[in-house]
Amino acid sequence: MSIFLNKVSKNVEQSSTLYKCQIVIAGDFNVHMEAVDDPDKTQLNNILQSFNCPQHVPLISMHKSCRYSTLDLVITKTDQVVDKLNVEPSGAISDQSVIRWSLPVQRQSPLVQQREVRSWAKVDRDEFRATLVSSELCDPDHRPDTAEGFFELYHTVLQSLVDRFALVRKIKLWCQTCIVDG
Image 1 (spheres, rainbow, N blue to C red):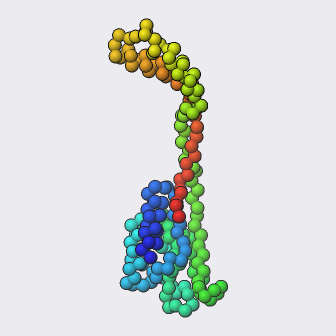
Image 2: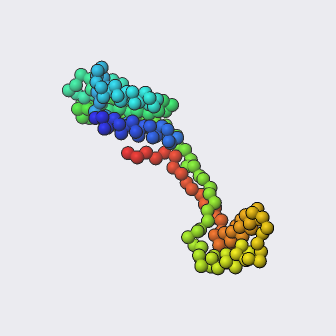
Image 3: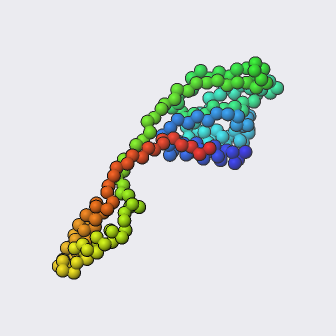
């Protein structure tokens, strides 16, 4: 159980801190939420409280043969509203209760980043080398008198070569805002 709870903690932490998205965790946790002294319940509650993620299912009998046995949970962030949460009585469809709820989905537009890139892999290295060797930078008759002059010549020549051989192009990167490794 501790491996499972560590995974829950890791996923909730990742979703809460790294991604700006809604969190919905639902299913059979096999943790008796109604048990007063259950260490698994205490650990799960501590995890959920530390990330402001309430559990919405009321502590009621969810299995025909048990007095209390709340194992199925619906967990969200505090700012998410769970509408119309109903726990159908056990025995109607199966020996376990059916939980129904609705949750307004907040769709976020994907983030778009624009970058300027150069196609270095497409540069003809032999032609680049030949052009560099025949440039002012490699011409002994055009030696600057100062260090600043050398740096200026180096920058000017290489910038013109780069602009000629590896043109700048703009690309768009579409970033997902909510990715969770399950």
